[in-house]
Image (cartoon, rainbow, N blue to C red):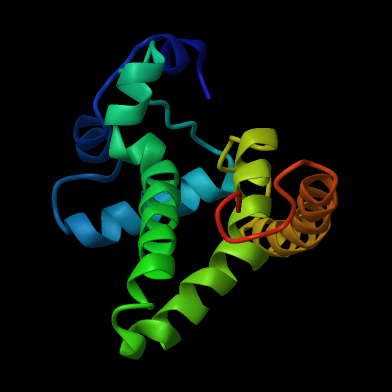
Length: 155
């Protein structure tokens, strides 16, 4: 890769047209992806978020955060709704299992390895489940020694 190509910022569409031609966009995008995967080119965000507020508002950066927030709110609401509507109990089990067995580890993995290329998706999944199985018992142990204990309200 030449020094000039690294210093000059161009849009992805312009790069595809210049490098691969104008004929078949899909095939050109597949070639671009293969070059990106092989490390021949580096794709950078031309306008990365500069503050936490902009990070949270950009779904391409914070989709995982919004998914965790929505699942948590759904899980908490299901805990109280299942006493009124028993037919929601299977959904409560599914969301509760995700909240216990996956989400704590996933949030920790996202905090420790924020880069997309730091870990493969399979490594992220395995670490998320493993870390969740390590974190949740520790939280239970800590809650056991607090004045509230382990009941529905402090959890």
